[in-house]
Length: 212
Ligand code: GRF
View 1 (cartoon, protein in one colour):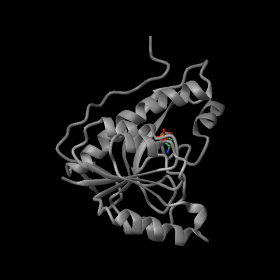
View 2 (cartoon, helix red, strand yellow):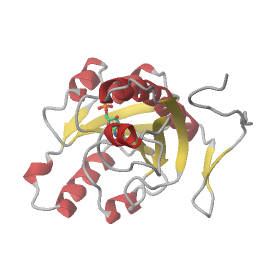
View 3 (cartoon, protein in one colour):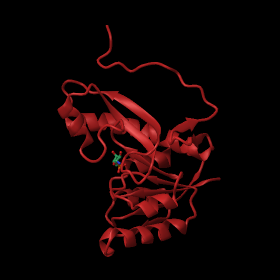
View 4 (cartoon, helix red, strand yellow):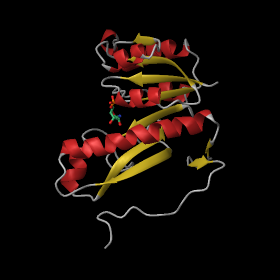
């Protein structure tokens, strides 16, 4: 069975969704860059080994990334999943885990990379927003996309209501993406596109607001 290491920095709701999803792989460890990340308690409750690599203890990004990689490699994972991991990773780190390092981002990439995605979507008045699971590349929030979920933006949405609608979908698509990866159903094309093997895709549209 393939092994998964999950990196977190905070709340851990995606971690929880992954723990509850009965993935076809073993969650070997949860690693945080913050000792006070709530997600560490969620992992412990599920009997998952945890480790902390405090970024504040390292002089620069490269030394932190080296220590983080050493900690990850103890568990010899096939896949490393960022789940609310709030550190930018160096090119060397990303290269080390090429093709097996994935992230979940709360927007329909390539729109709204970076922070405050829900506030920015509301500000722009978009009618459709969502979330994305993608491979991590050195280009922040720009790696090959594995799966996305789109949600409508409602006229009376606040940042909180929109965030909650998106988060709900995050908890559905991240386990799906990881299951595909664990089962060898995902291939990266030479052009950096993700090919989903053995699966036909329905071709329907999400229209928001819906048509009459
Ligand atoms: C999620 O919205 C995720 O997309 C983003 O950070 C947030 C983490 O939330 N990268 P949680 O810690 O999984 O609850």
